[in-house]
Length: 155
Image (cartoon, rainbow, N blue to C red; front, side, top):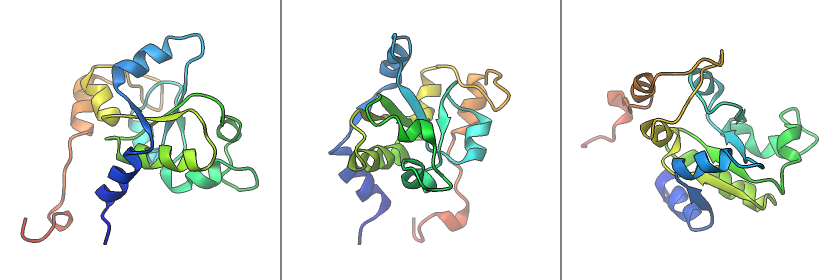
């Protein structure tokens, strides 16, 4: 049986990862990458990288192709563009980047450490209204909180 972490580890062998400071530099370039946030819309609304595109991981494949209700034209037409996929911690983005490579995206990478690391590096995040989110609020939001029923028995 494979676990979630097994899928992430296997996908990491096939993708490129960038640290937050690498992305910070790329965003300042003449041709900045498309930042693709694959978190759920509620997560995205709380805080995200400004001008990023939100396509939840659950609809990614259909969003990447024409002919579906989930189709996102900007994403479909970005197969040759530099894309950096982001999520909370870097796991969903790893799986998404690998999937996108399999779908023909040539220049896709994942944000190592996810938005948690982005916030730790004190890079800017905005909320749904476009207002800057304080680093401390990010620290609180990105803190893992497991309910008792989410912890493996005996651990």
